[in-house]
Length: 306
Image 1: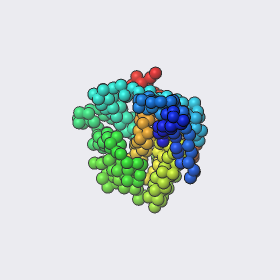
Image 2: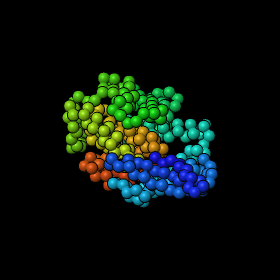
Image 3: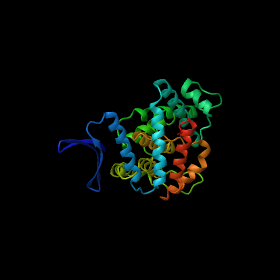
Image 4: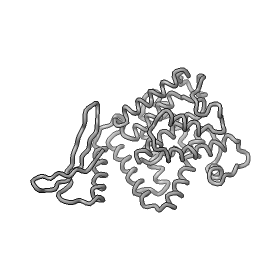
């Protein structure tokens, strides 16, 4: 956390930005002198933002290089600057368009056959395209509801948050399993990945939440969001909906820290799944470059570039 501190030294009002952080049961403190005399709130806010960016880009991270961090922070800055310039109507139109695309792509990755246009008909006009199953229609409706839930949710990542997301995702599709952990073994067709037995699932989810709380200041926000999402996938706690929930968790944690949501495209499905499978063995060499590139592509698709 960065805050503004004024010190009176020999009759002079000196301004500093102070950064305090607890790491491994010790407090880490850094300060930066920003001038003498009165400084406007807007100027302090601008300098705080720059100082926070410096702190992030200078720190060494476990999985991301300094160049990757700079790319991520640059995209975050561009995104937030562009968003601030939009009026309410423009913002709502952009958000609606993005949420519709995100819903289409996340469902399509899992096999939903609705096109982008058909998804828009379902979520924006409450129409049911011909030849589509009720399940596919509810998958679209539910995903939008899950995005709205995330957008308005003020709490932190927790077991109840996970269960609520899953309850929304499977509403009207599989009421018996919605918001409940699986009680049987699961297997992905065509894959030799082995998931934990159902008896272990509740404790593994509690362990995941504990890991998040313990490590949420250790990792960069993109690292943290990605790792939590991937660890969730390795547990595979539900009979159905694990992939959708994992991507929603990732975007929730990104949005919580003012990073752009990431929309993984249907056309990237094979590349994405390959990166996820590699991550099952704690090899993250593919997933982070993939997500950084996807984030950049997302912003470019909306004209959010320098």
